[in-house]
Each structure stands twice: as C-alpha cells, then as structure tokens.
Image (cartoon, rainbow, N blue to C red; front, side, top):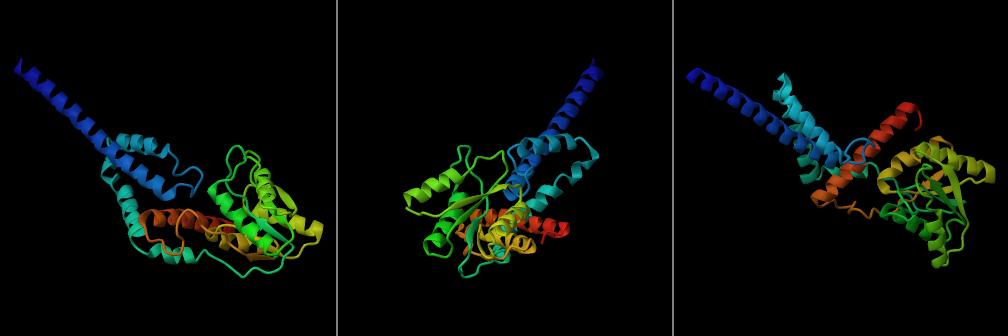
Length: 271
C-alpha cells in the first residue's frame, strides 16, 4: 500500500515538474514573441504580427520538454539586450541620419509621390497624408505643374480620389496622373520611367518619407529617372531628436526595414 502511494506521489511530482517546465517555457516564449513584435513589426510582412505571441508561447512551451530547453533563454536574452541598446542609447540617431537624403527643390516636370498605406475606403493614413502635404507645398510654390501618384497593389484602395478631393478644397488646380499598380519601389521607378518617356519629361521631385529616401533615390536613378529628393515630414515621431524609448523603437523598425530592403535591392541589381 505504501509503495503504491509512493509511486503515485512520484507520478504526481513528475507531472507537476513537466507542467512547471511547460509554464516557464510558455512565459519565456511570450516574452520573446513580445520583443519580436515590438522590434520587427512591419520590417517583414510575416514578422511582428499579432499571431507572433501565441506561436512563440506555444513553441517555447513545447521546447521546454526537450534537450533544447537550456537554449531557450538565448533568443529572448539577445532581443532584450538589443531592445535596451535601441531604446535607451542614442545609437538610432546616427543610424537614421544615414538613410536621409534631401536636396533643395528645383523646377521639375512633375512631383512624384510614392505609394503609402491607405484605408479600405481610399482615405489616407497619417503617412499618406504627410506625403501629399509635401507635394501640395511643392505644387503651390511653383516647382512643378503636375502631380504623379504611385498606386500600390491592386488589392488596396485607390487613394487618388481622396487626393483630388483635398486639392479641390484647397483650390489646387493641377493635373493628377496615376501610375499602374505597383508592388515595390523598383516597380514605382519603372512606372515613372515609362511616363517620362511617353511625355518627354526629364526632371522629377521625389516625395516619400525621409527614412525611405536613400533606397528610393538609388532605385529611381538606377532606372534612369532623374529625381530631386524632397522628403516629407515624419509625423509618427521626432526624427531629429529621437529622445524617447517609443520614438527610438519606431525608428529602429523603419531603419531595419530600409536597410534590409536596400541590401536585397543591391543583391538583385536594382540599385
């Protein structure tokens, strides 16, 4: 009788031990998923989404039963250290400056605004609005006689209607031309190159976000499109000071996305 109870106790202790391992692994996985989501959201299309948390939690919980459990601390530890460096040091100030290109605007045939996220009804997000505001400034100051809007993938709403309505209300009477639907910055450059050949245009003012400008200018010039970079304002954070944790984290995501994108474009021979 005593040996049977002892065996049951061993089984209970073994079950509790396994549950404890799984719980520790799950908590560690949740922490890792949180860091991945905060650091790499929008860096790659499949990284940093909301499903990152449950996937990492489940994966770490299962790995806690295996011989790899001693290694489960390394990935979250590395990301925690990276988060601390990014969020609490001025390292991002220098990294972001390396992405920004800006020149004084000059007379051109058109202002080209690169595509940005829009809402399902075609309304403009904060990022899209920042880009067109800069375009309106350039048009109203007489730097170009027309606006060229880049259109994103066909699954997204067309933002030209919202732009035209804003221009009407602001009494900006300028032609608005649209590119074909494009999926990336290189396709935007090729689409504008076709417009340039068709209309015999030779000079463009290029409007996009400051952190996107280095890659965008390189792609357009590689495609034979002469552009003057005139970045819009970054409305999501203070690009010039990056004084807070949230601003530095947001800047890191933009920097990581652009740096990876530039490397991929260079590898493909697009810049």
